[in-house]
Length: 260
Image (spheres, helix red, strand yellow):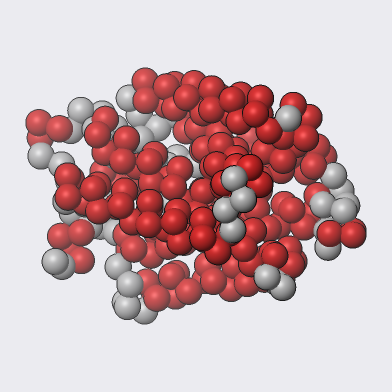
C-alpha cells in the first residue's frame, strides 16, 4: 500500500454529493482544536460538580446527539456547526473516560489502551470500507460517520492518556510539557518524509486532546492539586470565548490537496 493510495481522496463521481465537511488544516485549526479539548475537560468537570455525574452525562449525551444531527444536515463546512460538534464530542468524550475511571473504577492504565484499541478498530473499518482515511474526502454520509466515530474515540483516548500521565508523577504542568513536545514529533516526521500525511494528522489529532486537557486542568485546578487555581467556570468561559472568536478564521478546503 503506497502513500499515494492512502492519500487518494478523490471519490468516484457517483459519491461526490457534497462539499468537504471539515475545515482546512491550518495553524488556526490546531489552536482551536486544542482549545476545544481544554474547554471540554473543564466543562465536563463543571457539569458533573453542578448537576451530578448522571444528569451531566445524560445532558452531555443529548447535546452531542443534537450537535451531530445539525452537523450531518449541513452539505458543506459551516464553522459554527462543525466546532459546536467538536466541543460536544470533547465534553462527552471526557465524560466517557471519567465514567470508566470514577464510576466503574477502571484504572487509566487499562482504559487508555482500551480506547486505543477502539480507535484502531474504527480506522480499520473506515479504511476497509472507503480505502482512505484522508480528511480531504469527507463528502459522503458514510465517510462522515466514520470521521466522527474516530474523533469521539480520539477524545476518549486522549482524556484517559492525559489523566494517566497526570497521576503517575508528571502532574498537570509536566503533562503539558510532555504532550507539547510529543505533538511536534509527527509534524517533524512528516516534514522529513518518514511519516505520511494521513498518519501524521491523526497522530497529532490524538495528542491535542491530552495537551489541551492538561493545560486547562493546570489553569483551573487548585494550588493543592498542582494548578493555578483559576477555577473551572472562568477557564471554561474564557476558552469558549476563544473558540468562538477563532472558529470563523477557519475555512474549508479550497482545492483538492495532495496531502493532509
